[in-house]
Image (cartoon, rainbow, N blue to C red; front, side):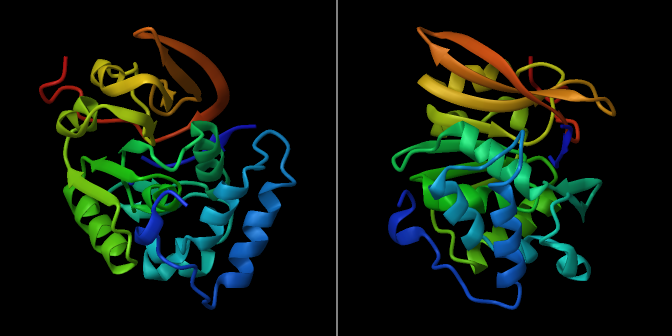
Length: 236
């Protein structure tokens, strides 16, 4: 199966309460469909609860809110998209987030992935290279009460060294190779999920684990993401 996507009790008191809204029925139907899927079946109850509690319609342009609970990516401007919900859930599940984890996300986009992670971990640090998107995501996340998500505009290829090391790293845009800085900033025993491959072609979603300072990796799914940019801006 080819998945398409975009290039943002762990949260404790910082976790927003699940909200009843006009989209609740459609959101529940969407999330319930994940348990019936084949290749990307979602079984982690914490991830399911996080997906149910995350208001995806708040992370898409107003004109597209009626399509927010369809299982497909949607444009969010600046040639970027919000990821397919089932892929967000799958990547979150494969990351195996723990309540005390500090997680780095590369590619904030709309902020949706960061919002899903927020109740599952202690802290989320999210970087977006497109400044208007970073500003919009920060505004949305603040409005919705996600107090444990920290965002900034910056070059994701370089990571967030001041906040490192991270227990987990999730990358939602595709580099042509795994950025060395992200490997360095991953804690021993940590996990990274990242798509790798050229633009406009099928890429591979890899799960990496850091053991004894070395990276073990395996391919888990063919995907297609927008490219990671910024390698040329001061990165090796």
